[in-house]
Length: 194
Image 1 (cartoon, one colour):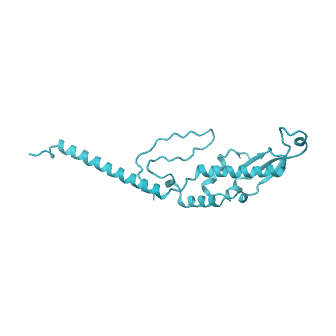
Image 2: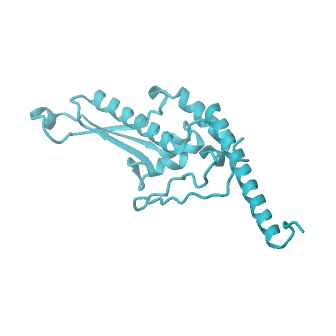
Image 3: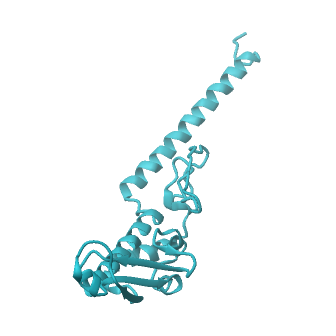
């Protein structure tokens, strides 16, 4: 629907990414919907996943426990309540849409050595609470990645607005061309009355 929209005027954008991180795709063309450059099937799959996403649907991962650091006195020194949960990128990718796959490796929780997402929690006094916190952090990170990578759907109101912009742009361009043509004709003597 939007692929036919005007693509003549590029909007200059400067994308600076932190070291080692790929640049995020940005809209480069004025009057073109951001979603126009995406595969529509992948967009539909990603949006469907987002609508049905629940924290409980995440893969289990591997959780290990160790002694926590920081305040807590003797309890911290005696019990292993720090939870570290690891999900391999391959394992996570199976339950995520294709548009989100590449972004997993740009996550702040990504560990390149093991090619996995590794999250730690030690704020609670129990293993179960820290493990649950890891799952919450993963769910929050996946929502953030989805929001960054997958554009929202365009409303009918905006579609009509952009179609009207395209039409007015074309009309003004044609008026300008006709005006230039008549100026040129007048200069060459075709416009004078004899």
